Image (cartoon, rainbow, N blue to C red; front, side):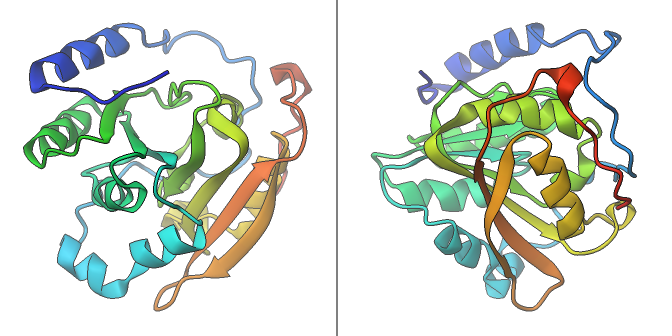
Length: 236
């Protein structure tokens, strides 16, 4: 189970304990390496929130994903909290939002914003690049918004991520249809990498006014052992 932070002090104590549990980055992974480029991590402050709202992306994505009041959702790579804030409104007071980021300073700023705006249904979590550290079987929707192309160990990342889904839950990916090195993920590459972890695309749509798209994935097969994962050979 997971619950919201009730105070700034309590929030940072919890986050510090989570950070202390980070995996040893020097440890050798049992998972296959990505046979593709990996884009560098960038911030999400490329435009003001008002400018992003005028494009209507978040509203369209949240509606397309079927987010409803009372749902539990996760925002992975939440950054400054653009989607987190809007998901908080969408799920309402009976719903829950878990906002995760792997950059401690970004996580800290988001935690302060959540407390400043009194978002009682939002919790903030520090993850690690290969594992967002989601509680198991807890989420109706898990959002990966303009961040999947920055994941350098996608098979390990997805292996952990999928465990956070409830029965019938879905992963929501928003990305651009362009090469990974240009901060996008071609849909064929996305489908291939997700399929390697037993995740199948069930719905996709282009987003208006951009080269971006939204795709929904659901569990279609049991989770493989790391050594049994077959990496994709598609170049992004």
